[in-house]
Length: 462
Image 1 (spheres, rainbow, N blue to C red):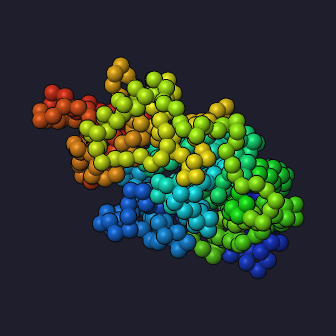
Image 2: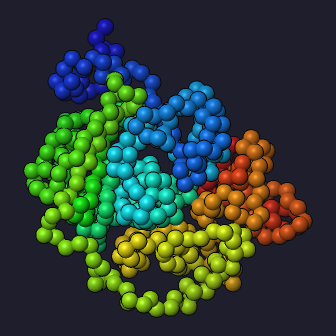
């Protein structure tokens, strides 16, 4: 029986294009659409190190097998367990991600202390992978143009306990005007025709057409032009798609190289679903030559700070004092990297700075920012209610009054459903609820009960 008859949902023009492109490999490629989709997760190095015993427990629980191109990535068997429905997922110990999509960040190789942009960040897989490699040092700006999807990015940044990331909801043009020649590295996982999603998303099949491919390639080039404006001389840009078309991949890179002689191609990689365990991905690493007649990034005079920063505004200073008092009592060993406190209404954040001092709150003026760094808490009358993001950013074992339960305990189940927990009478106040020692969120103890402060929007149902 021919493959076309076995897979009537695939568009005939798509099948013909892939047969022309792959020739003798086409049958094997098209047959891959009859196979189950691949499932993967990636450990969070901000919370789990390679030698922690819990990794072996997770490997056995979820039947994990290593992803060859990502040292923190693993395939899992969905028939054995559902890692997305586990308390460890809520604690941010890992991120559910398609294995092919893990490849390009490893090629980009983010390093601690760098200034990096993820230009089309939703849902946040590559942003969280970049942040893990940065180990809390440097600055990551994760941008997403669609508001609802930008919110998902912010939620994933929070869940993974990331403190050095700003989440923006801007157009590429807005960012290019604000950040010319600013970034050491840029991740552009471009919106594409989604051919690599056909096995898991039937809507991607119905949306596909040759005209859609052409439209995507045009849009990708428009975004690429803005990205190149923001890349420093000597900087690296990673371009990736989850599609197979030449127009959106090799041909687009050829157009970049012909139009921008300052760019040079370092490497390209493809993951094919009939050759590797993955849905498919294209990646290219481009470098901007550093022998250009372009100035290095300098402080934009529109946003420059005085050489000696003035004292904080009164309300910010008072809010910061409340946070410091809370932190000294609850997590006395916790420290924040270089940055500044910001107050938006009642919400207190810690905005990360860059190691060269060229980034500060002035750069956010006029931009739509969903998360200006780490959310520390909500300021009430002469007190602070600690933020959920702060709980997830705290290192293991740093709090004075942790309340730890086993992953399969009834207490963890109750906490994640928003229920009150039984406490003791030895102390009152804020404490950190943890699963096997890893933070889940806050509780507040009073008179033998622990009031549940796990966010209502995150609570488990059923």
